[in-house]
Each structure stands twice: as structure tokens, then as C-alpha cells.
Length: 107
Image (cartoon, rainbow, N blue to C red; front, side, top):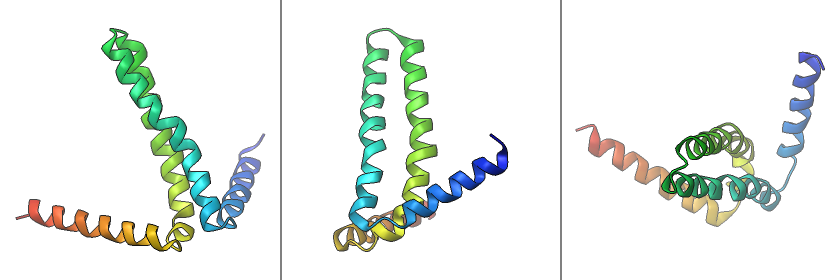
């Protein structure tokens, strides 16, 4: 598969995600989160049992998937998610708290 075909497939996938409704976008975002977040706890348990390499590899893979997939999905789905009143309200609260925290540390 050439690079042009891969880019075209990703463009079509992004367009399909952008066409989803707010609750469909939320479900799409929840799916990888339900897989990635528990794997971080499994990694900590593996490290706690003395499996340092396996635990470290698992947690690195979980954070990589979280960063690359979940973050990208969130950026695509965020406009639809902000149409949900409760999500928009929670997002605004979080942004205000982040601003206050940044301002407190910048003094």
C-alpha cells in the first residue's frame, strides 16, 4: 500500500468520525479508553510482582496508545462532544482550573 493510499484512507476515516453524532463520538472515544486505562493498572501490578521488563513495556505501550490514538480521537471528536451540555460544562470547568493552576505557579 502506498503512502498516498494510506493518507486517503486516514482522510476518509477522519471524515467518518467527524460525521458521527455527539453520543456516538463519546462511545467511540470510550472504547479505546476502556482498553488502555486498565492496561496501565495491569502494568503496575506486573511491576509489583517483580516483572520489571514486562510491566515497563506494558505501561510504555499503554501510554503510547493513549497518546497517539485516544488524544487524536479526542481532538477529532471534541467539537461534537462539546455539543453535550454536561461535557461542555465539565470541559469549561477543567480549563478554568488549569488556567488558575498555571497562574499560581507562574508567580
